Length: 410
Ligand code: NAD
Image (cartoon, rainbow, N blue to C red; front, top):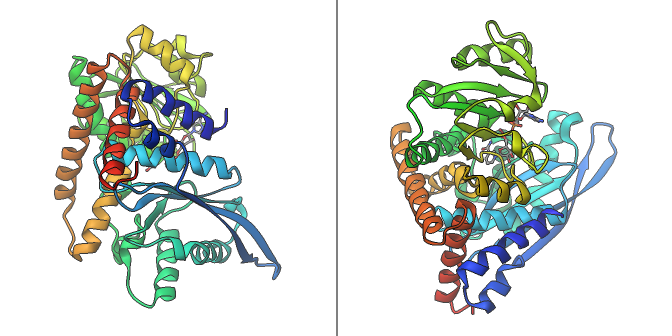
């Protein structure tokens, strides 16, 4: 199944419970529009290459479209569409006054020089500039795009329109209107919902956590959990798993990984194959690496009682059903990793005020938003005796439907 088919299948499943107006449901199965653009880049060789880019705008009934831009060879029209649908449900679950969008360019930037990357970023922004804006559609970073790329894109946009417009894009460097906490917002948000879920399940103090993936999401979350007294017993990357029953010293693991580029040969820890992470004895499992990491093939090995999806789509639908049967609670991606878009929203709010919050103010606001969303989703899953994922989808569908109805879009 391609991601778009998966996204639609999830909606059909949620509609069986939510039963929103069928005409509204019909409209929510497709994006409002998908823009396809040619992105010409003069390469360092002097030759021009033309790449294909997209921006999918799924739904803007609750507010401007919002979603990242990825630079990756695997970017397709269908993928960008599906990701824009998921952004719509994510912003709805968090109750943000935003819709859902996503963009991307099908390109392998690994071999690009800095100059080529800047040219690509500026060319992509020029090609979609007519369709974005602080009250229209607000992009952000995603795979292979970062604050530096956002800075170039903002600059290009402001040159085109002839005035400052920091709210057109989020995930910017702090020096040009970025927000504190944005760099670890996804992990911080996941931490808050993990704490709520652990309480609901009465998990023990110093609960054992295994984290798959030690990139932006996984490494910040490992640090936050370690600092709060959780026992992070295992961490993996694409090469290996590092395991210690009494708990890892996350700071030391970070230093080791930075110094050697690997998790292997950490002092006092067991080294296991990468895929062994899913089977280690633990209370909480955090997939923070890949789509489809937990499938029918390996779901039986899982010992955790709670799974918190920091990655997008790490549990296949088949595995999800088996976990539900076994009573394993899965906090779905559209809730668990929504800290990033929530702080993106805070960034926009600060840009609009032209005044900036402290780190602790942002923590407090993020905690309130994540916890409120968690409680609403938990109540929905109890009410309908379904998974937290379906509980979250039902909340999202109902909220988007209300906004559609309020606009007379029936
Ligand atoms: P990243 O590229 O920084 O890190 C990915 C990590 O996964 C790396 O440590 C890599 O070694 C590891 N990995 C790759 N293959 C693996 C495998 N087979 N087994 C174990 N580990 C493996 O990426 P990221 O930004 O941390 O994103 C990870 C996931 O979280 C993605 O699904 C992404 O869409 C999702 N996500 C991230 C953010 C964010 O703000 N970073 C926000 C929302 C969702």
